[in-house]
Image (cartoon, helix red, strand yellow):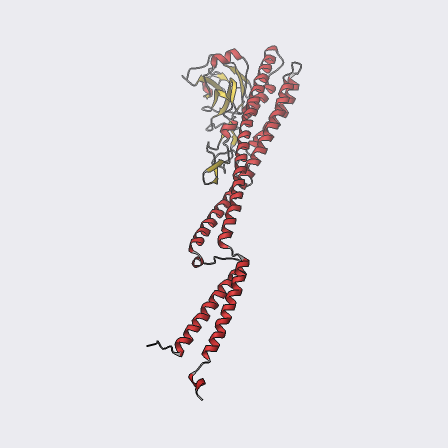
Amino acid sequence: MADRLSSYQISTASLNNILRAQAQVAKTSEQVSSGRRVATPADDPVANSRILQLNQELALGAQYVKNIDSLQGRLEYQESIMVGMEVVMQRVRELAVAAGNGTTTQTDRQAYAAEIKLRMDELFQQINSKDASGEFLFSGFSGQTQAFVKNPGGGYTYQGDEGQRLVRISNSNSVPVSDNGKDIFLDVPIKKPSFYTYGNELNRGNPPGVISQGVIFNEEEFQDFYPNDAIITFNNELDVEPPGANFTIRRRSDNSVVEGQKNVAFVPGQQVQFGGMLISISGKPVAGDNFVVETTTKQGPLYTLEKLVDGLMMLGDSFDESQAVSNLVGDSLDNIDSAIENISIYRAKIGARLNTAETTKDIHLDLELVSKDVRSKLADVDLAEAVSRLQMETTALQAAQQTYVKVSSLSLFNFIR
């Protein structure tokens, strides 16, 4: 027996066909207008998953490019500061050569020392430079802390740390974006042993006692004293007759008194000679204040320049002092060259980092183009194909609508006469 088709079934089937055709036309119209083939995960689950992955990769790559831009800006600024340092050091070198001319007098040398002092202050400012975000370039991790400070009692203190900040520029590579000032401006190897001085931060003098960086006055005596360090301690004024300010110099290693340096009467600014070294202390130190003289095989440029200034200011025109000036200038030139070489080494490191960053950035930009092309092929619609399909689907919808009108108007009563 043949199945019977009611008017309701015929009408429902026709309407469903029309609704499906309308939905398909609407979907294709949306694709044509938006230009996207995959608007929701349901459109193509596999392609949608891959599109999400590509979007994440593109976002990560964009962040890496931003990191590289920031890295390049900071490194280029740091390099420009270091170029300025080299210029300062070269100028000081010229002044030192001129001051070491055998025909100069103490007055001439003091004039040279005045300009070297200005250049030293300029170098001090450069070493404490800040980046665009206000952080100190050469303080390691401690970007909010000034790299170097001048101690009230003489000498310099590095306040930063020995850390090195890294910036990630790819999934597998991080590049240093900073260098600590200790490596660049303190631990500079020098050809011959030298010394540096500083005051104890607990000293109570008012005005505070300040020790000069001093000079090596007698090379042979200094070599005999090296590698000892010395402590200069101010004693009770009643320890001498008549009572007055006095100090004693002891070797740090065994606390033994340096020959001829016990209860020495203190005169502010007076030169003190021991162990082949010549220093002076100014201000008004009180009993218990002490100052340190450390011998070393490393010396930063700030110490080199300050020692040069002190020597040119202190040393006179006698034969021994003229010889000391000649030795001082020779040692200073060697140490200046060592400082310039050390700065150049770190400039070369910065150049290598910039090259790495530039190469990595190019790779990210190339990958961005490839990823966007792949994403476009997955997500974007083929406009010519979509328009043709839309026309076909619109024709099918119109046919379904016309068919429904024809079928819905049919009735048995049409055949009754």
